Length: 227
Image (cartoon, rainbow, N blue to C red; front, side, top):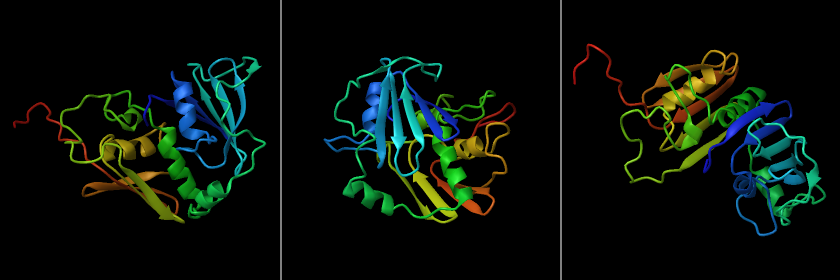
């Protein structure tokens, strides 16, 4: 969420397209110096000058971070510019096992709902009704401020278990926009439905429920209304 990223979800592979792949990779790939990372992720190979191909050991899934706008890469394999990333030969560390053990069990419907959040971090309605803005801005430049400076701008919390999960955050995006991105025609998750409850929203898919608690979109003034 610190950079503009286009997400391209594919079968058993997640591709992150960014103009700063060398900045994004250290946030996700574990290294010898510690820091923020995704437990169990390992660098498998580096291609060309801007593509990191990683493997998630617990699931076998592939994560690709590339600077190629096309989202594809065919360049030759090269030495990585970062030599401290753990390679696929490095087993899970004790810390990683502890982190993974803390993740609650979730149902298949809940997995689909939660996977829908990162997959849509840069989506935008072509009619201008909603936009996610990589979770730090409003591409539609609507009136009103989401953060008055009294809260941590990037404060977020996702937690739950089985088929009931709740996501709380401040700042962008609006609750309505996130719910729309998960349920709108064509871009939404098939079968997902939303309902607004006060200042929050619920998105349901099968037996799973994802509660969304953040800021609501400011009232839009339309022709014929007066302030």
